[in-house]
Image 1 (cartoon, rainbow, N blue to C red):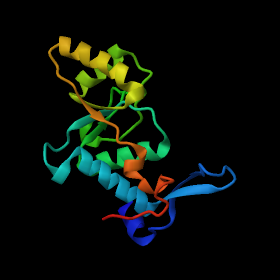
Image 2 (image 1 turned 45 degrees about the horizontal axis):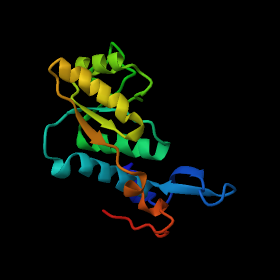
Image 3 (image 1 turned 180 degrees about the vertical axis):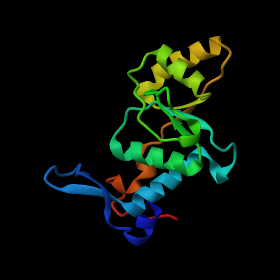
Image 4 (image 1 turned 30 degrees about the horizontal axis):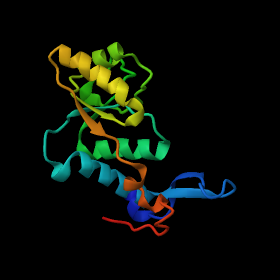
Amino acid sequence: LDFNAKHNATKPYLVFPSPDSPQTSSAISFAQMAVASHRVAHMLRPNREGPERKVLAVLIHTDSPLYIAILLGILRTNWIVSSLLFLPEFDLQRFQPYSMSPRNSVEAISNMLKTTSCRSIMIHAATYELACEVRSQMTAEGIEITFVDLPPLLSLFPHLSTSHPQDVLET
């Protein structure tokens, strides 16, 4: 991503239908995605403070641009993305991010969190109730769970705001 953000900054990373006109396309460039992933990383781990290789469960149901920016930002923190499509052969030393489904049961989520020693979950309004049930179950077992809020789309991609048509790339 960083190579393309430098050498192909204005080329599209993602293309999607324009919110203003379905007949036209909008895009997020390589540079914009890189900036968004840095924003996520800084939000999660300002100045790279805190533990290395922390496990963060991502229990969200959101659109692709936001989800991709979140995963890329977590990778920048040197943390581990955990999910509820848990594979028995999952090895924390050979980490690969994969999708987490909020359709799993409280019991399944709790089991995955215990198995991966995960104590933090990224959530948003659509998964808040489920996450609270998981936290309640885990607390009853003596395990504290913290929540990390999903950042709003426009905080990562301000250029998508109709009130700010020009994108300002920050480094």
